[in-house]
Length: 365
Image 1: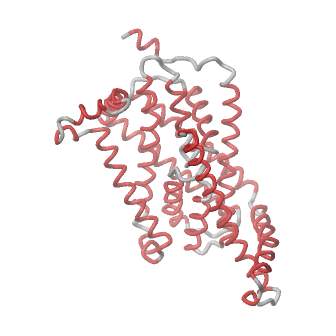
Image 2 (image 1 turned 60 degrees about the vertical axis):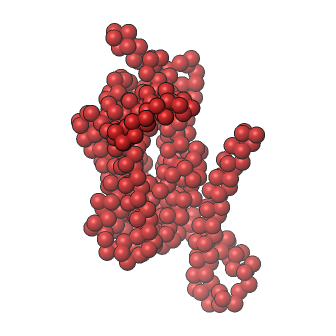
Image 3 (image 1 turned 135 degrees about the vertical axis):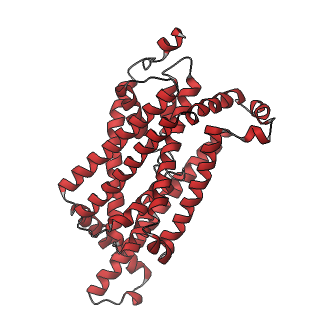
């Protein structure tokens, strides 16, 4: 029965993803069909709905394909490279988290695992589903600190997400006028503020604690939970991060650089399509979209991300078809690096195990 429920849950999310994609494509194609009808001297309002839909789905895909083909090859290449740089910067950040936890992983090995995680991100829920696979491989790197290795993956992701939320909130200040004038950007921004507050509380409690002071029996209750000992060990591992100020400064700094790369990537895509997009506006729009897309709602955030791009870029006068093109191209670039991760994964599967890199250090203790 549990497998059936799990299958239904995944099926529902995939169906929801497809429904969102269908809805956004249909609405955009209807808009293109309406414009085409008006240019041809036809009265759109007097056309029957089947006629409207037929015209929309005949001309809409053609216009979308025409827009996609407009991107300059150089802009496309630079944008693809920036995505790869952002992923590699994430590898560097994860190695810092590993070092802070007393684990040592070679750069090549960490890069391979991260790209494999990118591969699984392409079809798991949200844009962070590959972290489960990353945690699996991280645990196989050691026989002595499996819990700590898994914890590093989620700490790395949470610090990265927190930094992106912080970046988005900071960029709300110079974009305050736009946020106040448009609910399409203002409401999601309020959600981002709430996410930042909630995640700050979670990380604060994980890194520095404080619950036990008000509830002395908190640890005892934690041990009674399923896998309570593992949870307690993970919590103790998190305490190590809070004690290292350099760790927080380094990881947050790298995360902010990654955020800038993501924004620049979208700016370059827009320029490659001949769009006049305000860079300062994208500094808040892009991280807001990425943060919401990271929530485990649909596989790889598909549907959610496209709808947000169309909705929020419309605020700065970007045509719907062009906004959808930006989103689709950005997604395709992610899939390109996912393909690279898939090839690496095929190679890893040929090995019995990944090399254990912490055994020597543990034996020395």
